[in-house]
Image (cartoon, rainbow, N blue to C red; front, top):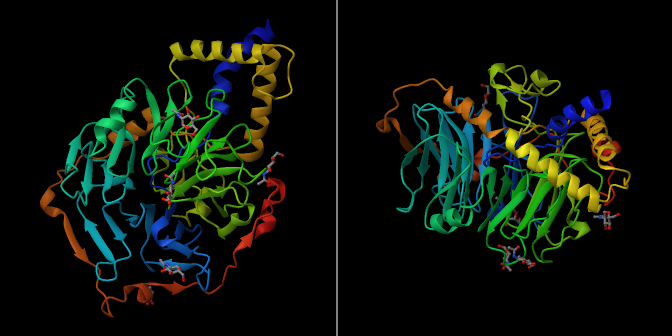
Length: 464
Ligand SMILES: *[C@@H]1O[C@H](CO)[C@@H](O)[C@H](O)[C@H]1NC(C)=O
Ligand SMILES: *[C@@H]1O[C@H](CO)[C@@H](O)[C@H](O)[C@H]1NC(C)=O
Ligand SMILES: *[C@@H]1O[C@H](CO)[C@@H](O)[C@H](O)[C@H]1NC(C)=O
Ligand SMILES: *[C@@H]1O[C@H](CO)[C@@H](O)[C@H](O)[C@H]1NC(C)=O
Ligand SMILES: *[C@@H]1O[C@H](CO)[C@@H](O)[C@H](O)[C@H]1NC(C)=O
């Protein structure tokens, strides 16, 4: 009887514990601008909350990190191929840098509060949290200025921006909107992340769905168990995800085609980001950033930044529906907390479906976890192992779209007006040489470390 009860409670638990972070939208505390070979992250325990960048080009004379925008406190960063954007802590101002020496830095200001800033090839899109709408900048005549509605999982690729409606439908805008929207029309999605010309996400049953270009097998999604793959990061023609139960990174697509590969063995990640052929992940133990190329070359794996925030600092603890990271206040230097990502709980009708899938998979033995006794034992083992991993790693949680939407809708309603929007250049002291004037070398230098291919998460901290 008690076993039965345990089993009944085990099914939802199983779903709770098997989840990991999705790179929600593309805004976060780490971004790759592939065109500029630059990786930027928001460092923790610092005020103002500054952006630390590193030029990861092999030919760069120095790979030591520098501060972008000294003295500006930043909330989140996001990047497209050539454009890098940073949303200020007030969430009403953002800066974009595009490598063009004259218009290097632009500032957008408004009276609205923004979130989920995402950058595509040309366009910048964000959720306007006070007015329930998506707004675009650098529209190039192919994106609307704004679209009303409640959306989550805003993401931007080449010539397309997509988001998920409250009903789990994928809506898209831009030249590739119809193609992408049609491709997802049969799926009820809970997350989507855009690459160059493809998008991947989880459907409501927790399975990976990829649509769009498959020129390098980047859309050939692995078929694991529900919620096995989460936290997607998509580059120009490869895809990476966080694989449960250990939170390791796996990738597919790219120069070597559709095969699944593990770029860094035995290391748990909080989240992944990708740009061009590069993917970077924030390691769970050390909060250091490891990057690798999509060509599977072991030599490309290296640590590029240390001490990066595991998530955006929010000032209001109530915004965290699912608890906060340990040492959260210290991470945010006393000015906020980092929310744990929420667990995803599928609809009750889906639970039954997932249960069936599980039984089939257990019976057929498609998942090689070395357990072949019976379904109940398998699932219970899994749950308890999961639980252990969860406790050990303070595993990531996932923002449920419903929660994300309710967070957005709880934003204060203020009468925003488009005329408040301004666009101007940052003052520059030496014309067109903002690059050097804005780049302040960090006092301590950081050498790029090669990560041993069998890096063990238990001694991941030795990287530091
Ligand atoms: C990175 O370094 C390379 C090689 O030195 C250089 O060509 C490139 O412009 C640098 N990128 C940035 C953003 O400074
Ligand atoms: C940053 O702020 C400090 C203290 O207000 C000031 O001394 C410093 O010059 C500022 N740095 C820049 C690059 O603006
Ligand atoms: C994508 O590419 C892979 C290999 O290149 C192929 O096996 C697969 O059928 C393709 N299509 C989809 C939808 O995955
Ligand atoms: C994959 O992306 C890279 C970089 O954008 C590009 O050079 C290459 O041609 C792409 N390969 C395919 C098969 O699309
Ligand atoms: C990771 O482990 C697998 C299986 O042991 C191995 O095949 C693969 O080469 C390893 N990957 C790296 C990057 O060491």
